[in-house]
Amino acid sequence: MNKAIFLDFDGVLNTEKYQAGLRAEGKKGYDKYGPLFDPEAVGNLRRILDAVPDALVVISSSWKMEGLSRMKDMWQSRKMPGSVHDITPDYLPQDWHIDLDTVDDFSILVGRGNEVRQWLSENMPDGCRYVIFDDLPDYLPDQCGHLITTDPRIGISKEDADHAIKVLCG
Picture 1 (cartoon, helix red, strand yellow):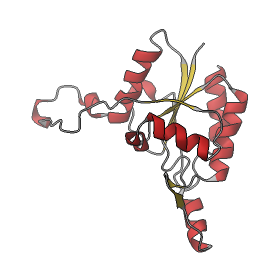
Picture 2 (cartoon, helix red, strand yellow; picture 1 turned 120 degrees about the vertical axis):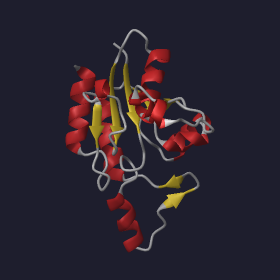
Picture 3 (spheres, rainbow, N blue to C red; picture 1 turned 180 degrees about the horizontal axis):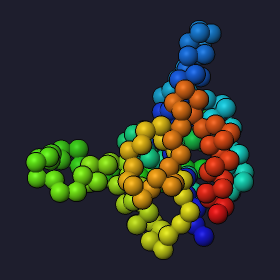
Picture 4 (cartoon, rainbow, N blue to C red; picture 1 turned 60 degrees about the horizontal axis):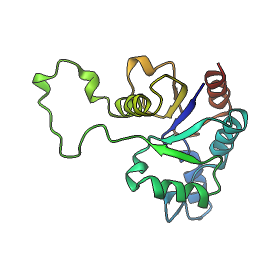
């Protein structure tokens, strides 16, 4: 069975605690790609990928706007675990406008949830096991069992990693 990990960055790998610690020590908290990732959160992602090495990493973070190539370069440059497989598509065009008085189904407004749904339908139409890491619940009701909402202060915790491994391994 195919497996995927959808990753937000801010509040998941880029944590408030780590950035505050770097500032307190007078250290730079960013590189040419943006804010540095918390080594503890990255370590917990590594635990998941060690346990489920066939899981595909798909970036759902707004950082994806920099493009797949840049995300792959960052991943390699930062010596992140596994490799970036893909980024989720943009669900709505940037110049798209909506009249809320005419909307019948408000699920169309759930951006990241729809982006994940679109990616799954295009890349794994026969289904898969997946988890979504995000610090915000911007997802569709049928994705709740796959969503692991992180505490933005600490990002992916050991408990979050354990939960992800259980979901991905069935």
